[in-house]
Length: 613
Image 1: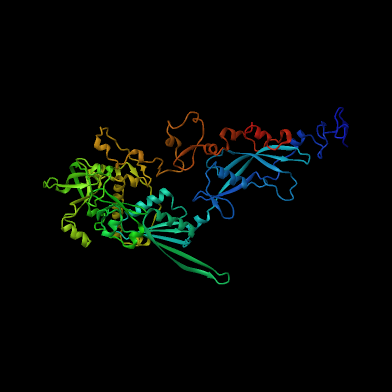
Image 2: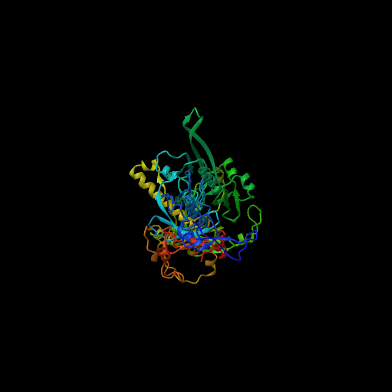
């Protein structure tokens, strides 16, 4: 039986006195409420977290490191990120009020990450919630830890990658040339832009590559990327696999043939008269400077440039008079040069001042003629500003070379062609003829995970060895192209090699400073670990000088194998709380509920600028 007392001096609404009762637990006078219990006793006896799960399971794909969301959807989230926090909170049952739930309204006011062992397959979050525990309006607050057990589960795309015939769209990329330099360049473009994401597998063949995709959307995105980087034309077809007459649903497999233009970097062209006039009245004898969504050409004698659109090429394909093959190029040694000033070029069009300064009359000799005869040549070149005495360059010898185009052969026999067309300058050990020049390069490249096609696997031993040697030579030629073309290097990612080059201290003269195509250390990227192990030593990654002041006692965790980061760094970037190792060891699984001051939702949290004291 409750004892009702009257506090003197307390006035009710009608002008009378206010009645109070004694708490059934501690006998403290309180205002009447349905539980007949004071706020302190109510907080000590009530579990605010009832109905809320404190342990749940998350599924992560081991292949692509994505997390399962719902209904077969997988999303990519980094550890301690805001996206992963939202995914974890969505898997905690009880935070959202259900129907026929009389437990009172629950509000989440804070969530923070809790440190866990890197290989424990556990995630922990410390949640702070507030709940109205009785109809009288008493609001209690309590903090507790929720454990998330990480289980491995393959996503649908990774499952499809291990099944035979699981692809739905095939993109066949082909180029009808005798080398693979274009595909080596295309591979670097794909890596830098991440265009191969969503691809189930990649197979390589002698004349191209095959890309397998699980749906048409990913394949269309990949082909759109190819259209932006190379001139191409696409042919599409489909094959009926199965059909359901009752539901009128059919299953198709789609094949897209992507044919890249046959022109490659450093090919020598003899343009038709109409096309030469259309792209700026340029000289008909031009050199392919670069290949992108358009074909960029340059006059090797005047330096004038022009662009051939992809549509114009496919309407009337151009065949190169000399292809940029290793066997068609000759090594020349530069003996001297004289700067020239060109007032007007052959097309009677003015040349800008910057281009005039790059022209020079080069005196050279074939490397094979040194020591046997005194034959020397003089020729004007657009690469003159790069050359100095003693340099070695590659070029086409047009005196004895027979070209495939009839009109070009007539012009050559009339003496209207230059004797030599320079292609590029050689650098490093390649120029000096060192046998291990490739191993001493200061840069290296990443490669895609490629599979050999059936044609290459079924070949005979002698043929396989020949193909391997040709691939090695094509890769070496591609690396030389990167060394000699700064514009080309800006489109790909190049990394520092493991070999430490010994840089000799020498005074650079004015001519050395003019060489803007030479590769420098500033262009190379770090963080390429080709042989990274799962448990790599952190000190080896960071060194003794990379730890900032105040980080000596902090725990370091390697998330990606390439970069060592401080735990809690990503959480701080997303303004999320993080409890370190020392705090995590002393934290309680569930704190005692406390009364919220003033019975206002989140008042303490907002008064402290979103932080708990």
